[in-house]
Image (cartoon, rainbow, N blue to C red; front, side, top):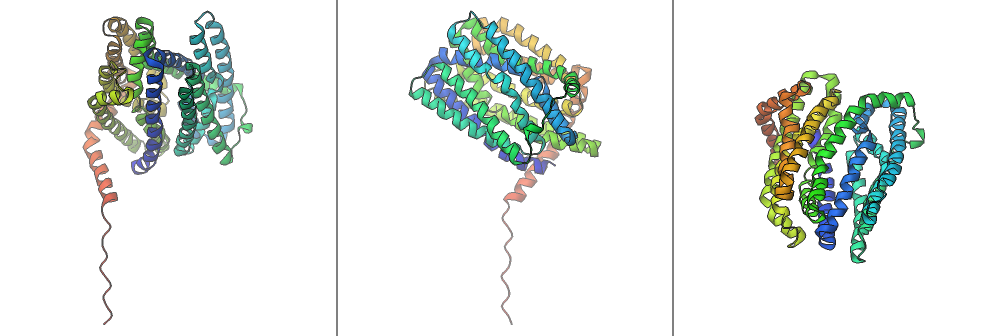
Length: 445
């Protein structure tokens, strides 16, 4: 299974790495143009709306892939229930955001409402879930990449024309909508049609009964990821928030790797789960081992190159981001293990077990932010992130009953890791070894 996994994963990683790597360059260009305060306002508004988008998702993201894999015959009812429920909830949330933002400074309100346009349309992400369930990971990655190029052109034109920050928020919204458009084109090209989706209140309620703990957990998770930027802005101002957000955006370039790995691994592991339970658990332990190795290598790379990366991207600006990035880099390790843990809980229909872990970590993060941001600004927030991620994805695995099977798999992954590394080395050597030279034909006698 892992041989096929890495074959697909390599393409997905390449495409997503290109997109996210270029995104950092775009953020760097915006940072140099808007300055620390301007980029702070832009990224803080994006962080706030990302929290709202998590609510509008209703916890369906992982459940939809699982349901499409397990019961493809019912996909029209499942996709219809998910899509139209998200559409209705997102529309109500956008109207609520418009009311609650009354009285805010005009620039900040317009930024929030512009990003908020994604709330009603975020349900088109279900097209990506369908493609993922069908093993079309590369298609989704290409769609995101082409849409990103279009958004990048809008941003570059805006910088050239010295446009206000609102234009760059619109560029992000346009990128997301174009991604949905490209996914829809591929969806229809494969013979599927959104017109066949139909909303079933019964099916929607069935899915919501299971997904609401995941929604709460995901909300707490997104808050865990974004509350630091919001709190730095509230406690230290736009400029400090910009310095912090700049470092976070660099570190998050690597975060797509465990997410991409999960999107490829989960459908295959779900199939294996039904066929061979023992092999399934062994492969999941291997999955944890791969996640650990990737995370350590990624964290070490970011920590050792933080200075040159920040200097290259911002050319003398955002110098305070260096120390923040060095700390934030090590949060990549618990993040990777957390993504793998969530996939196991998804397969076992135990996503509810994530909730206590994330809520505890969020509480730790908020408390430490209040204590450390006034003293150390963004670097304090980075340390709070590292501690809270470790609490969420490592410590609680050994403490809470609902996730103790994950702790067993993590320990098993350490035992199996030498064998897994040897297998990977053997496969690499087999692929890179020169073909044997055939002896020349003997001349006829």
